[in-house]
Amino acid sequence: MGKTHERIDGRLRAFIESQPIFFTATAPLSGDGTVNLSPKGLVGSFAVLDEQTVAYLDFAGSNAETVSHLRENGRITLMWCAFQGPPNIVRIHGRGEPVFRDDPRFEGLLPYFPDMEPASHGLRAIIVVTASLVRDTCGYAVPFLAYEGDRDLHRKRFEREDDDSLTRYFEKKEHIAASLDGLPGLPLPLPPLSL
Image (tube, rainbow, N blue to C red; front, side, top):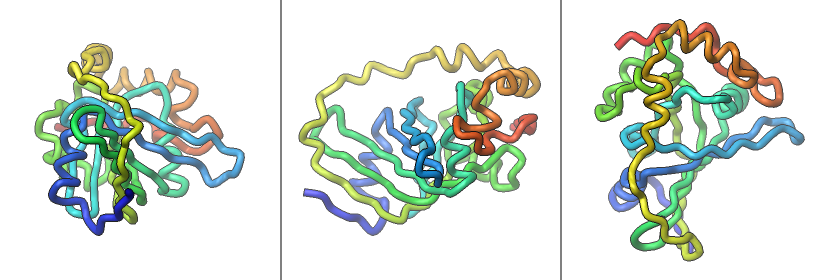
């Protein structure tokens, strides 16, 4: 039932680009560390950069587990499920890296997300993932669910923040500068977002 793909193209690319939600999974190297699984949404915040590379915008939130784990070891899996249409599950296993606002590559990556206003969501970094294994499986047990649209709560919460107030927000949160397991997280103060 499962199939391994050499690249992210054609039907596979069309499938993952059309999904309104995907999931990321990361873990620290420590055997007793906290495994993290996160849903990612917001239409326009994900992009296929080439046949081996994808990226997504990492927005403000209450923790930075994915960033911490990627800084430590780079391991990441992304997963998409077909909740509508033919059943399918796609996983990209690979190496990820957070590209922070002060990285020279940051501005060059932003054009891949033309339909997203980064400042409205408290953009912290762009997560770039290079695929080492791409697989799809049947998804026969995944239920049908209807997509009604993105919630506007994240934008409403963070569009009123500027770089300074966003840094103060992050500094108050227990698991932004360091992960649940004490790994380095988001570097603070947050570098300015120059758009």
